[in-house]
Image (cartoon, rainbow, N blue to C red; front, side):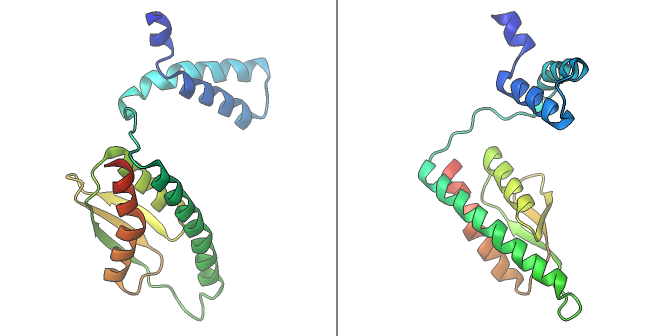
Length: 165
C-alpha cells in the first residue's frame, strides 16, 4: 500500500489529470494515453507542497448560498462589462486599483476569494500582502472606492469567513 501511495499520492488528482489530458487531446490514441499516464504520475508528487490539506467547511448551507451569489454576480458582471465595452465612446469606465483590508486568513478561504475575483468579470486579483492583511484588486469600473470595499467585504469576504473560519 505504501508503494501505491507513493506512486499515487493524490489518486483523484491523477485520475482528473489523465481524463483532462485525453479530453484536451481529443484522442485516445496510444501515445496520448501514455502521455496522460505520465502526467497523472509525475504532476501530483511535484505539486504536493502546493496543495492545502483538507478544507473544513463549517457552514455548508452558507456555502450553497455563496455559490448562488457568485453565479448571479458572474452573469450580472458579464452584462455590465459587455455594456461598458459597447458604450465605451459614450461613457468610459473608471478603472482603479482598490486596496481591500482583509479579516479572512484561512488559506482555503483566500483561495476561494481569489477564484471568485478571477471569475467575476471586471475584477482582477493583483496582490496579496505578505501578512495577508490586505488585497489589491484591479476593478474595471469603480466610482465610490469606500462603497466598493464595503460591498466586496459584505458579498464575498464575510460569507467566506462564515464558511471556513
